[in-house]
Amino acid sequence: MLTMKAAIVSTALSLCAFSAGAVTVTPVDVMGQVGHSAKVCGVVASANYAADSRAHPTFLTLVDPGQRNPTGALTAVIYGTDRAKFNNPEVTLPGQRVCAAGFVSYFRQRPEMILSDPRQLSYYPPTSIADLR
View 1 (cartoon, rainbow, N blue to C red):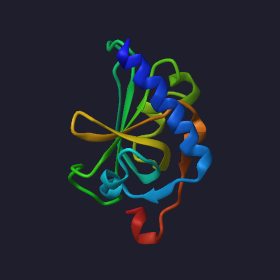
View 2 (view 1 turned 90 degrees about the vertical axis):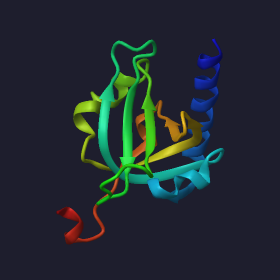
View 3 (view 1 turned 180 degrees about the vertical axis):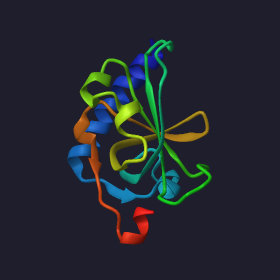
């Protein structure tokens, strides 16, 4: 029950961040935003749907473009109740450059953000032709 309450509070705070125009950071810099609303822009390095888990979450790992080691990464979580709104995120999002807006929390020693509305995700273009490689 406590986990569900935390998810509800985190979702509410994420939607507030979405509408409030939060600060924009990279996944490497997101640790400084734990406990605050932020917009985190990076590349979806992995997307895993945990169908057998209790809440049926999809975990997105956002890293800086060109980052080989995801030590400075953000985990964005889409719970099963919201998954259909994102059109199979584990298939459509890997490799995409996205910005995720919401409340940044700290879970299992990593920064995390709950995504419940597709409007919390936006795509962004590479900054140069070299970034396309």
